[in-house]
Length: 463
Image 1 (tube, one colour):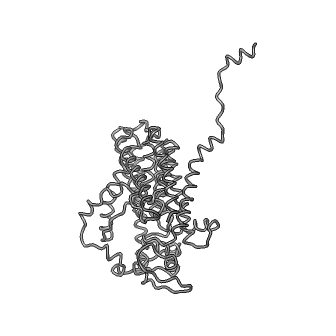
Image 2: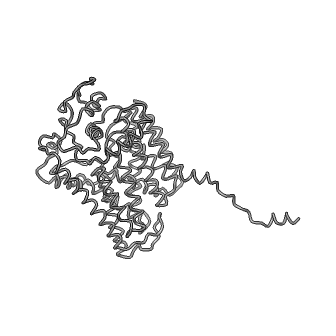
Image 3: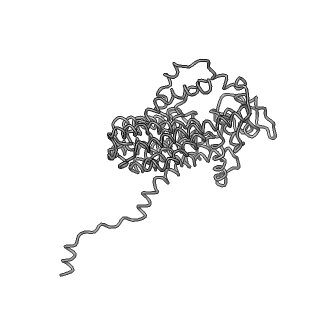
């Protein structure tokens, strides 16, 4: 009788959560992103064997020569020319035949054989060469280019996982993040550079790493600014066009500083991430770290280039094509907004164009809609809204800024492609995931992501 009374009056107990379930929730989504990146890049590398037409010959040459610096005016070497001769180039031009032991002439290849990637530091190529050595034991061959392309899967996996960590730091749900990032990973303009030799392969990792560092810095801005300066230096050393994410962070710091100076957001709850408090002085230190690090890298590389070899720009076909005599004011206006949809250009058609276009549009338009939604309708005075506004402003003005910078620094005009804004994609993906508020919206994007995986696998195996 006593036992019955005890059983009837005691409060029901909640069964403890399984530690395995907790681990699955914590590590499952990033593990899936890693598997996705490695699988899709491996599939792409296996199916697409030609040398890509977007300067991949030059990047392959730099990969072979790394960690040495490719000097201005240096021509591509025999290893790179042999790769293009034997693989062929995905462009309607004739290349010398693949002959064992042949000595090739650089003048028989594009750009008259000049390595137009000489403006890049050797950092990306050296890192990729190391990663290729890690991949080599798992590769079916012993070819540096193939292994370097496969290493692009590691670059993509790193970018997706870092973007996932950014989203979690901002309190975005796991399922929403996973769905959006899977869609981004399938986008042709994300996948193609990840599966070829190009510094653009590191864009996702740079963009996500910079954003994660900035959010970590903002929690202790007076102490953690050296980390912000370091990530700026590394990102710019990988490729100069990575500057777009750092411009966005600079604008973000200014927006947060304006809020603090006016006393509008200090101590306020931050929609997705909790309360952020910082002094104007601390934010100024962070902004100064971004600017000083940017200038230091640019000056250091300019000095290094000046001490290397010299070639008359008129000897390089690309330099002649893009050289101009006066400020292209019409093009400054024309290029405004070109980076609002960084995934708009997929570089090369790999597989049936209709399937490629479908995934590209789904990913690109979703991120654009998510960015606009977060920038205009996000929680008032939240740092996520400030971040969205900073990214939107940078994406809108980035093309025009690139035109001005190219003219005043080199006297050239080159229409910046949308992909130069790829370092903004991680921020756009996280903001989009955070904007998915209803179950219906989350389900729709999840189904879209699943369809993108199926379509991507099909298009890479159907040609």
